Length: 267
View 1 (cartoon, rainbow, N blue to C red):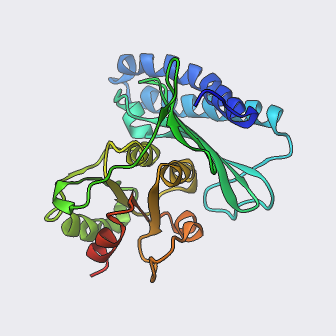
View 2: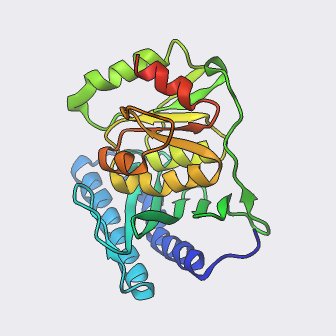
C-alpha cells in the first residue's frame, strides 16, 4: 500500500508524536524499579503526557471530532476513541509490550485505526474498506488473519481485566486450555487484536475490555478478513460490533474458527 489517505497520515503522525515522550520514559523505567512510590507517579505522569499530546494533535487536525470516554455513551457524530497506554502494567515493569491506539468512529461505524508499539516500532493500521496493514520502511505489509481450522493447532490469547470477576475468566480458561494448542496472556488487548489481524495468533477471547483498548483492533481484524463476536451474543450468523464495544467481551478470530470457538465457550 503506497498510498495513504490524508486521514491515515494524520493518525499516524499523531500517534508517533505522542509516542516520542513514551519512548523516552520507557527507557527510564528500569532506573525507578526500586522506588515503588516514585515508580507509580512516574508511570501516571507518562500516561498523562501521552494523553495530552494526543488530544492536542488530534484536535488540531479534526477540531469537529469529539473524544469518546470509557464507560460513557459514544458521542453522536464523529469521534476519536483513544487509548493513551494499553498495557500499562507491562510498561511499568519494563516489558516492551504496550501500545497507543486510535480509532475514528463516524456515523456509528469504525472508519480508521492505528495501533503503535513504540518499544518495538511496530505500527498497524486500517481504514474501512481498504484493508489492514503493518507499516514498512518502503512497502506496507498487507495483513491477513490465519487460515487454521482446528482448535488444537491454534494459539489463543486472553486478558484478565477484573480481579473481582475471576470466576468468569476461569470458566473461559477452563474451556479453552484443553482444546487449544496454546493459550497466552500478553497484557495488551489492542496488540492481541493486531496479532490476530496479522495471523500471529489465531484468536483472542477476553472479558471486560475497555472501549478504547479494543476499538482500533476490531477494525484491524475485520479488514484483515477476520470475524468479531460478542462472547454471549445469541446468534453468530452475523457479527454484533456494537454489543462488543458496549460490553468489552470479545471473540476475534479467523472465519474458520468463529463457530467452533463460540460453541466451545457457550456450552
